[in-house]
Length: 260
Image (cartoon, rainbow, N blue to C red; front, side, top):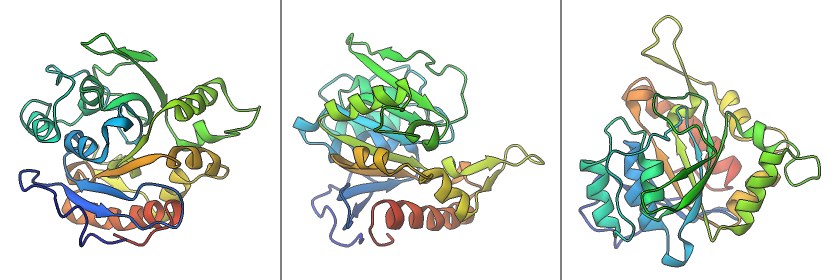
């Protein structure tokens, strides 16, 4: 996997979007973006999705449920540059409203949200209706294992059955990862984050029996986005070390690619 030569046509105004070219040995995304604030996923998803792939099914892994409705939703039909400006100037700097903003913009249809911390104001219903009246289904689980256990078999849970249908119906999927998914609050200092060890990262991302779920997610995956958010990962140095550990599990073990 290399960064050099990826998306050479990427215009200069998309500051902070680092393009990735992914040469994986398994089915999965072949390009993606790394950035710091998670709200920059909005222009990244617009750049990754062809018109025929919209609205995509989003699969996002995070520590926080970023399902707070935006105060100012982007209208459908904006191009990537307009969505980039919208994300920087009009979405919340706390980075918790970009998922529903992407739904309002017509980029994302339904979402599988693998996260465990509920923020004030998050949508808790199994669906959200955007300002245009479009209904978006939401599946929220705390871990990959909670969804992927017996996935693809008659024994799978009703929620897993629903997700399997969404994956089969969606024109494309997007895989989104926030580094702070692999951190926990420090009991002695709750405002600080503790990085998970590599073994815990792999177990959370790739629990036993999860390959059928990941195969379904990656079969038509249009792109990967990865938010570093160092402020939620213990600072710049801590986030850098965490990125290395997550990259081994995500790029090498899941996607069969090299390190970025």
